[in-house]
Amino acid sequence: MTDDSIRMKLGVKTLLFPVFVVIAIAIGLTIGFGFKSESSGVATYGIPVGLFFMIYPAMAKVRLDDMGRSLKNIRTVGLMVFLNYAIAPFLVAGIAYFFIDVMYIHYGFLSSAVASQVLVGIILLGVAPCIAMVMVWTDLAHGNLPLGVSFVAWNSIIQIITTPFLVYLLARTSVIINPFLILESVFFYLVLPLLAGMLTRRLLQRKQYFSKVLSILGSIQTVALLLTIVVIFWGEGYGIIDTPSLVWMVGIVMLIFYFVLFHLGYLTSRKAGYDYPDSTAIGFTVSARDFEVSIAIAVAAFSAYPYVAITTAIGPMLEIPLMLLLVWMQLGRMQKIEVTRKYSTTAVSK
Image: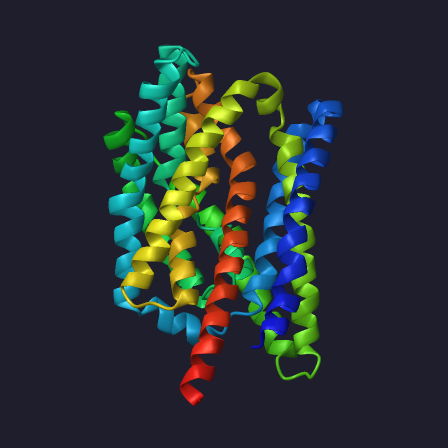
């Protein structure tokens, strides 16, 4: 791949996409201010639809034999499980404790009563790995998508067991995880899109225009992502209206733990000898969080503590822009790797 082809493939999209994200956020907030009463219904139905059309185009690119090999790759899965369950939740809790206890309470940004609830909310955001959006981030950053799908399958099983234990250990409270909540997410955000992608691939793979179909699906994925951002900021915009200071405080913590968790996964994988696609899949799997489960736990187990639910509701509002920032960084990193590889190959040939 030449320098010019890399720039043509990544340059314009990499530069302009953050602008479209900012515009989508602004549109969502503007609509939310004017139609606050409709926000709940919009989020309930709009987000699942948006997620399906974000994940389905990615699934159309997945080959079943590649996914089967990824599921059996014990070494890679073991590294992901170790980082995702033995390191990530404790790192998130440590970052949260530092900012909430040391920074926000000490300097008077939060009262101790509110701070304790915010701390629990952030811990809830950190204990459960993502089983939906992670595939979108991996796809957008040109990571190993079959490997990412296999990680989602493993995480959907493991987190049913680990989430109650981690919540109890880190937040000092007992919760019961309804396995049907996770199974529902797996069905709607993994099984259905995977079946749709398999059907699309089976029907059109041998057609000469299949690459054009994938290109169209890629455009659908981008539009669905932007519309989902609009819906999320429409539906969750009350968090900014009612508690604007809490948004930036939670945002700082989330920005740090997403950045740290991603690079923990990516750089550890690179050090272990994995290439860019595999390391990117591991990085996003370690960093992306399951905000659907977090919100459900907050509402069910902490209904008497409103700031727990508010904090977890702020989570998805901030997660998409922050994860897109990581995608943007990875595309630039991939470009540098491709350029370095090209010059290395040229030097060797000479």
